[in-house]
Structures are given as structure tokens and as C-alpha cells.
Image (cartoon, rainbow, N blue to C red; front, side, top):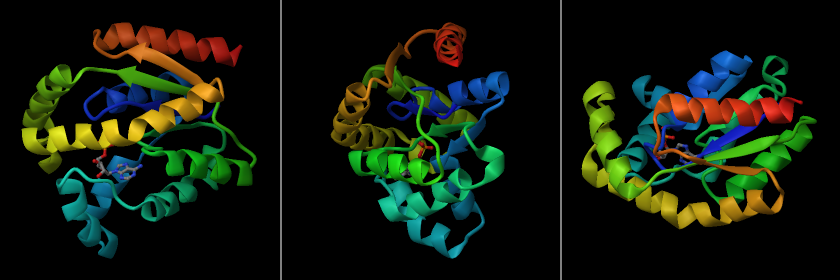
Length: 190
Ligand code: AMP
């Protein structure tokens, strides 16, 4: 089973993905984490993308596609990936289908976490104190939310159309969201 977890920055995608990963023995593929690793290790790519990420913009589709393909093509991750932070726009959603198909796989469910901007701001400022991410200051967080708003509708429509979309109210407690997501996954596991 391959899943996508989708939602605005600060919606709890990372938190919920870790939980799902442990419970269902999946592999969490967070494009944001992969990109932050590149920056931390000061690789050529990391140097190139740090200003884009810190401005709250999206890194190019091509760069992120190369990063995720490395995982999709590996046997050990076959049919057990939770995509956390990918796709972020329609081109990426279509690209993901192509990459998965090439590797005889597909998406089984898309979980969309819905959270309002007010709650996002509150959560991101709390996270800033814990994780110290440079893109978690209020101004960049709002920019990231805008980026999400601009790109998300076609992605949501795309998955609604294919019948894969499940909308989860992400404003509740972590445990409540955990339970709902678990039930949704159990239901498709059969
Ligand atoms: P995240 O950890 O998912 O909040 O991602 C942090 C930042 O990494 C985003 O604001 C983007 O700049 C970049 N990023 C993560 N995933 C993608 C993606 N799929 N496409 C483009 N940029 C991405």
C-alpha cells in the first residue's frame, strides 16, 4: 500500500506520517526532510535550494522528482511508502503516477488534513520553538500557506476524481486524528 498525506504546512503531516509508519510498517518519504538534509550537509543541491526553501517557495519539480524516484525504485520500499509533502502541485501529482506505474505501483489512498490558517500560525510558532526551522517564522509560514493555497486545489480535484481522496479534520487532537486515519487505512487493507 502506498499513501499520500496532503495538507498545508503545519497541518500535522509529519506527526501523522510517523505514527502511520510505525503502526503499519510503512516508509515515510518526506521531501521536506530530504531537502533539509541536503542543506544541512551543504551539498551542491543544498546550497542551491536553501534560499528557495527559506523564502517559502517550492523547489523545482525536477529536483524533487529525482529525489523521490530513488526511493520508489528500491525493492525494500515497494508498496510501503507514505508520501509526506509530495505531490505539492498538479504536475507532481501526475508525475507521481508515472513514476509509480513505471515501478508497477500505484497510490492507494490520499489523506488530506484540513486545518485553518489561524491554527497553522499557532502550530508553526510552537514548532519553531522545538525544531528551529528557518522557514517556520511567521512571515515565511504565511508565504508557505499561500503557496499551498495556490497549488493545492488542482491536486485535490485530481485525487477526488480518481476516488482516492479522504478528507480528515486536522484541527482535532493528535490522538483523534490518529484513530481516524488508522480506521481509514484498515478499511482499505481489507
Ligand atoms: P515541508 O517539510 O514538507 O514543510 O517542506 C519544506 C519546504 O521544502 C517547502 O516549503 C518547500 O520549499 C520544499 N519542498 C518540500 N516538498 C516539496 C515538493 N514536493 N516540491 C517542491 N518543494 C518542496
